Each structure stands twice: as structure tokens, then as C-alpha cells.
Image 1: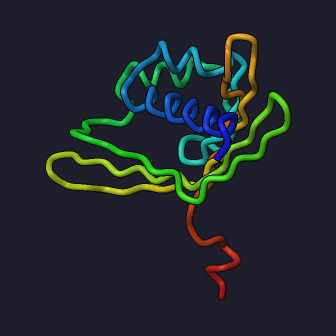
Image 2: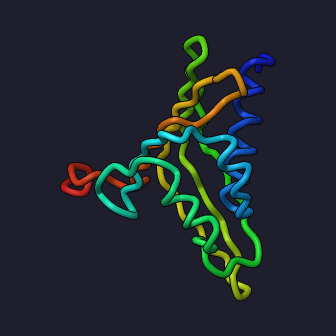
Length: 137
């Protein structure tokens, strides 16, 4: 992997880590104020801006978790100048009350390099399960 690509993956790790460690400051630094996103498991409509996520981060959205880890399965990076698209299956493993649980979804994030560094400008999440067409087979 070249140095420019590694810069993007390191940025993404920092950004995602800020969500799970309730680090609002880093989340704000790594996310554009006009963020747009689709999170199918929250609401079937586009959400705009940072307010919703800052509320979730500040109020322990992930619930009581003793420990967590996330893995990016099948990661792909497409880079076009100062714009990058990262896509992967996001797998979250958590430990709460001694029990391990796993959740997964497909995710794409669009990043733009601004004068003060990379920022996430758009996120799209979709289920990581069989489609209705596959369920009919």
C-alpha cells in the first residue's frame, strides 16, 4: 500500500475510533459540518449535519459495553484527487455483561481533503444480509 492510501486508512481508523470512544472533538474534526448519511437501521431517510451524531456520541449511543472492536472486511479504496471513497463490510464485536455479540453492515464513506485535512462528507450504510431476491431462491 502506498503512503497516500495509508494516510486515508489511518484517518478512517481515527474517525471511527472517535465514535466508539465518545470523542466528540475528534468526530467534529474529522467530519464535515454538512455531512449527509443514510443509516438504514435508524431511519429510512437521509440525515444531514452533525447534530444527531454528536447527540448519540455524547449520550453513549452504543449502550453498556465493556469492550469493543471493529473490523473492516473486504476494504476498498477509490481515490480521485482530493476525494476518496472507502467501502467495506463493517463488523462490530462487543462485550457486555460477559457476552460477546457481533453485528455487521455494508458501509461506504466519501472523504474529501480540505486545507485542514481529510473529512467525511457522506456515509451510506446498508444491511449485510441476503437480499429479498436471494431469499426467494
